[in-house]
Length: 154
Image 1 (cartoon, one colour):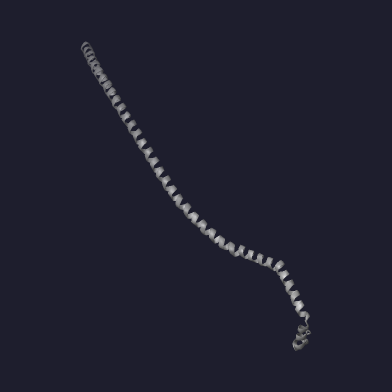
Image 2 (tube, one colour; image 1 turned 90 degrees about the horizontal axis):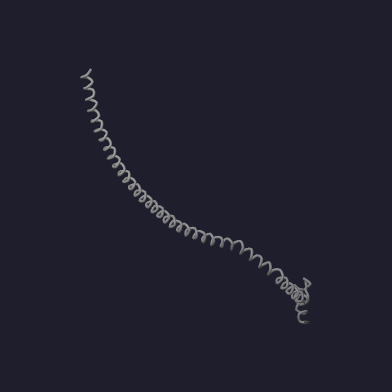
């Protein structure tokens, strides 16, 4: 200890600054306080600053990642929807064609039925007209003979 006292007294700078051997104790005390202060406050502050950086710039990085993921999901969704729309369109066209074919078959059936009814009624009407015609001819012959008799008598 004496050696330290002698060293500080021998250097003129220390003497002019009035620094003595207690500076070593002060340095040790300062170091201990600094270590305590660092462990209590500075490490917590460092943790908070790192957490803040992680939440700000890290959040930006994560947002970019999520945006890319969302874009990928949107593309997949659009591709699947195109497939669904094309299948729905094909099903719709197929259903429409089935309905058209059934409608044409029903229409053809009704047309044939109407044609048959027309032919039957045409034959009936023609037969009826022929009967009336023959009946009118007979009656006209009778009327002609009656009129001729009336002219002769009259």
